[in-house]
Length: 316
Image (cartoon, rainbow, N blue to C red; front, side):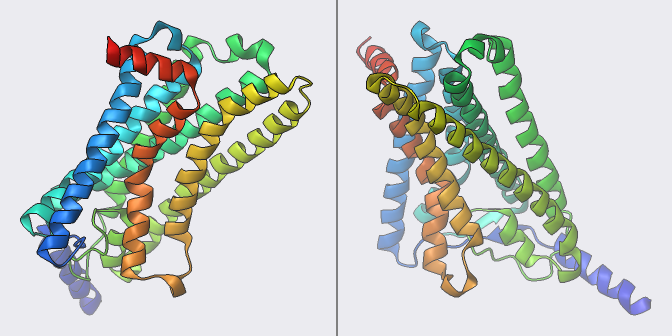
């Protein structure tokens, strides 16, 4: 009993003695570090501009006050939050040739990243429901997706994401850390912190992660089932022009979901045999940095109303 108690005290002292974490450097030479800084600066500015234009266009454009654009505004806010959580610290570390992030900073980064990623998936699920009702139950669209119902669904998406991120962050940072403070990622995320924790204390955190994975898989199944129903209805439409219009309202959402799910699933579920530091880094950039830039472009390319509103906003 005395040995077990001493071992627990040592683990807790190891955890409490950590004042900062070391993030994975994007490059090891000064030239490549500055190149990564410039690339991340360009990506973040593009994301800020694109998502900012969508938020402003939807907020100011009276023709865009519909459920689809309301949820798109929320998705743009989530994308902005996501890229502002991970990229600034990576840019700072590349510019100043450092790897350090404070303990509190790491906890905050982990919380906000989990919050915005979870809210994005929840909002994509709600947007799928919007497309399903619009095409499969058009006569009930105004009833099922009134302004109050849309506000409640968006609030539920944000609230559930906040609760999940809070639980995950509190649970992850309550674990004793026994394996140093070096993370194998350029930002703080849950799997990397778990790798540093003591082996016997991981079960609770892994259980919470599995609950989150099951909920995400349930949302994914809902999206797949909804699109099966949507395509069945669309293919029965006699008019080719109406079929094309119905498909054009679904394709942007389907493309965004495919990008989000494929990069995230492959990053977390890829076989260990093909894992390597460079591949892991590339995948982490793909699922954490690229979607916030591409999402507004995907939605605006095929939506004439949104393009017109953005054009009006730019030209005054």
